[in-house]
Image (cartoon, rainbow, N blue to C red; front, side, top):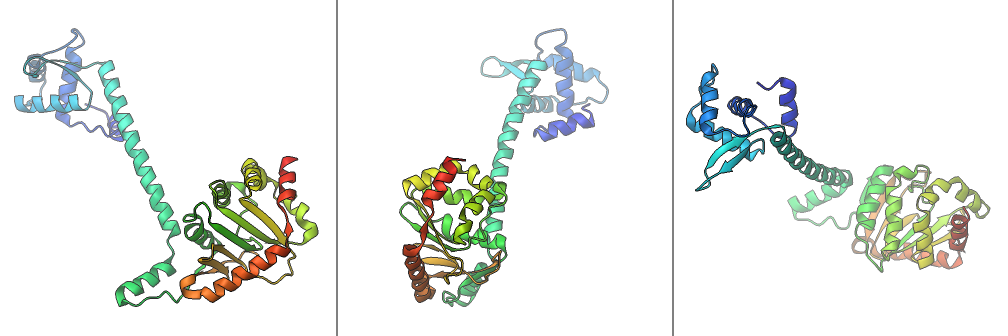
Length: 320
């Protein structure tokens, strides 16, 4: 009957034929070589002539029903809707296989979507946060006074996305203060979070970036990261023009908090000053209100003294 290669291809489409169903299908195809359709009696006669094809009448009907459900054969019906003739050909097989292919493709697309969601959930899961929640659950004691701490640039970026970007809405204010070392500028293809930052400004979220940089190196920094800026050129220009993206610079020697905050409710405070900061603590108003207010107050004070970069960045993009 069906060769191993054919059987594997059918399995990939979700079409699994039993040996009995293969024999019934072969009988219809053989009979339809010389006539347009066959009756149940014709099928039964062909099967009876083949050695080892001892299939009961009831099972033949079951096989025919399964083949019709799979779309591999067609049945003409009389009254009261009982099949009277059957047809199997290249046309019916192609139609059935196309249907199976479409259904299998939709199934795999849905599985891929769910798998992608599971992968994202797994990537964003923070063991430290989960540990705190387990303690709260099993001991009925709140761990709210203890900040969540994560390590590693990937974990820092994931925490920034889940705790800040994913939950901010129109009218919210995100402050970014420091050297922005966790921002990916060298490889635009990896800049998914950076793209989302700009998308948030399009949605009406205010992004205030206070960059620590040597003033006479601003032009040089723009040139060095031209690929990053050009990938999102139109969106960045639109965000600057709308007023939702605000960029300013302060001298690198100025002492300030390295942090990202959402409104005045929570912030990610960088605990290391390395080129690639890999340790961050999440503080909320509930557990560190004084620290939060001090960091934001310091940011806002420096903001009034900082050099505006919006016009410089806009002109750079407009002329590049």
